[in-house]
Length: 261
Image 1 (cartoon, rainbow, N blue to C red):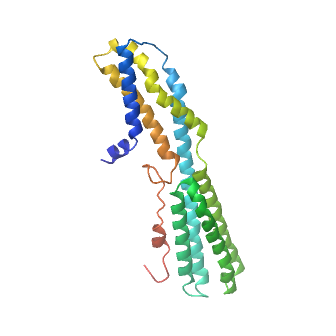
Image 2: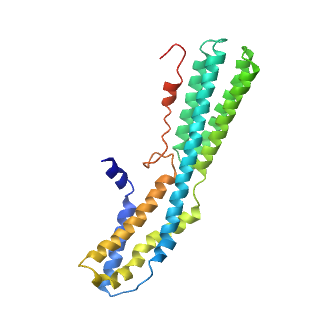
């Protein structure tokens, strides 16, 4: 069932519209004897190659974001462990405060990435403020007696969190080439109409009605590939099957307070 769910997730109203356009164009060309033949390698050059390139680019962006989001989480957890092991001996339960702050920071980040890019800009001010607060709070950790080498390590964790966040946010804001996607879409939605004369020229080569089915299938395949690319384009919006799951609640299980299982 999961396979069918994944398969049908790339079908939407655009698929239906493209199929109906292909059917209408093919019917009109057969009815009025409008015929033309064209080499099919044009389809691969003009449509398939740009779509496949965009899908590959979007998938690599997703993998890049996944890697650095994992770095962000790992350094956040390492910051908590460092506070738990080095600072709790001087000020018991200080790690609980950091656990709360880190979890709230990740909630803000996950919420921001699920918004529209224009709206997300407003949340960034608060996110950078939280990073600044984490860095500033280490002054207190130093004052209570934690050694200089440990403080340096804790600052590195905050710095690496900030770097990883910056890379992931760039993936969020900067997408695959906009002009290439626009070019692909124009050809995809013109193709159902352009295929009509070719369908009319081959209509008598097939059994009755098969030419219409082929015309619709071509359009559905191309639009489905475009939908797949759109799902991968934003790996944070939790719409596509391959989106990044933030799993913020995992932090609660990993950042265990001393004496708790």
